[in-house]
Image (cartoon, rainbow, N blue to C red; front, side, top):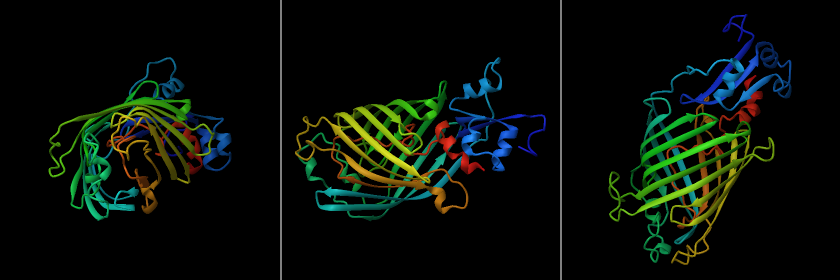
Length: 360
């Protein structure tokens, strides 16, 4: 703060935002923060002198408890951006072989017209793909999801086109609404809400999507059958084992094919690299295909920050996953953004406390 704030300022307040939306606030005395930067006190010692809060109401209460909160000013996010991202996914138990892989280069453009709003367009350029063109498990499942043909594409395609808006609500709560073509196979609308507890260590939310299959031949059209599919999920999140980096998530409710059940997700982050796995258990007695009956969607993944190969911090993460061949049970829609924090190294008060050592 020396050289920035006048000497008469004895207490400093910091606001961490993402795309203009409040994430975490920090309040610290000028003297304790200076000693910490100069390694005069430890991270644990600093936490006894500062306040890291999850909501802007709590931060304002520390600043001026006798006045109503006011809006804060923050730097505007970049109005637009374009990035090239390698996407690698592998599948086991493909009907045509044990192990299949698809690799593509995705060009993603984003425009941010206002706080929290993002228009997204994503073009997928296949580099290598040996995924089979059809899934025998779906031949006897006329109402199945039919994702195999989308995975086997070997020509460029517009895999994403739409808009979503995130807004901050009182009480460490955020909400999202999205519409457009979310991924190669699905287009529609989606809504989500999520609330943090205990400085972001725990959270609960809900989400729902109403989607239709996209046409395989025309990126700007829907499939001929026009059948709607929808999800309705309760999302639970927690870090129950202290600062071990272990995160656990549960999604309960209705999945995309109409099956009800639960999806368990577990991951651990160490030095910004995250390794995790998921496993679903849903009611499959209503499916006709023998491959869908008693099917459990499952897989493992690893993610790491984009800044690993950059000279400066860059928001975003690479992801590689190996999953079972995607049957119909336990499936969800991947929207442009998600409020569910598992495996994202989000900016909660709990995670910021962990990152204080890197702020020296």
